[in-house]
Every structure is written in C-alpha cells, then in structure tokens.
Image (tube, rainbow over all chains, first blue to last red; front, side, top):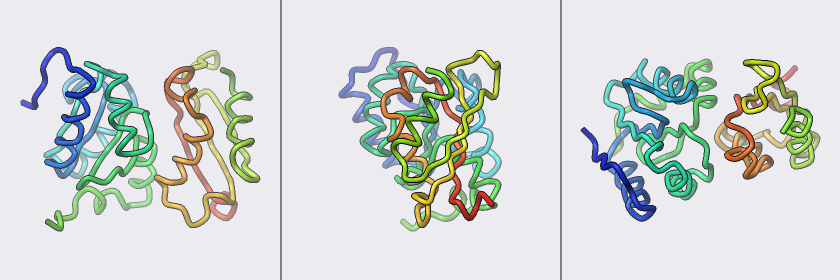
Length: 116
Length: 80
C-alpha cells in the first residue's frame, strides 16, 4: 500500500506529492480510493484510466484536502480534484481525460512506454 | 453562485467567449455545472491550456463556491 498516515502536515503533503509524481508513471490524485471513490468525477477519471492501465498510483486527497490543493497547484496550476499526471506531466482532470478518450488519444497518452 | 454569474465571469475574462452553463444534475443544484465555452482564444492551445484559461477566469470560486464544472472547450471552428 502507499504511504498513508492518518494526519499529514502541509510540508509532508508537498513532499509526498513531489515524490509520488516523480516515482510513478501514472498518478491520480482523487477523493477517496480505488475501492471507494468519494466523488463522481474522481470515479470517472479512475474508470477512464483503468481502461488502459492497471498500474495507477492513486492518492486520496481527503486526508488533507487544502494542503493537497496547494501542493498540486504548484505542479498543474490548478486546485481542482481529480488530477492526473503521466511521467511527471499534468494531463488533466476528468473532463480532459474524457475528451482525450473521445478523440482516441487517451490510450497513447497513458499507455506509451516511458522514455526513461 | 448561479449559472449566469458563472457564464459572466468566463465571458468577461476570455475574448469573444460564449459560455453556456447548465445544471447536469438537479436544476436547483448550484454546486455542479456543465460549462461549454466557445472562444477564439482556444485556437492553437492544448486541452490543458484551454481548460486552464477557463479555470483562471473562475479563480477561487472553483474550489469554494462551486464543487465542480464539467467543462467543454471549443474553438469557433470546432463549434460549427
């Protein structure tokens, strides 16, 4: 399981966000977890990604929502949840994932081999 | 925050934007909106950047007054 203590300070959240984005190919910051998404948009984003990848690292932001919003804003320029990162790059929330999927571009976006 | 206020913020911020705001769930739901924006400002921008322009227009309303928007961004050409 991912590193998930009960309480997180804003500094710990910032560090965790930096590390998890760096260490994983596909990361989804969501409300709730894979088994129990707590928001329809998080659930939708997870479902879209799961079509193409099984190895998605999910992070539940509800433990410290405001701190996560702030930490994520530094990476993506936005504070809304969910957010998806692939190879360290912000690729979108649930709407963008859906639009990419409709255009047939999502598989390539999340499925391609890491260049590293 | 009602639909008109959301549309107004977007249209003020983006050149020649036309924003259509609806409530996809309950008509009285003032927390979840479907937003369709057509603007020439989106031309040549990636989806992420297009969405960012709309997010910037809504500013902190987006995490405080509104739970979420379902956003569709289109250039005038794509909207035809």
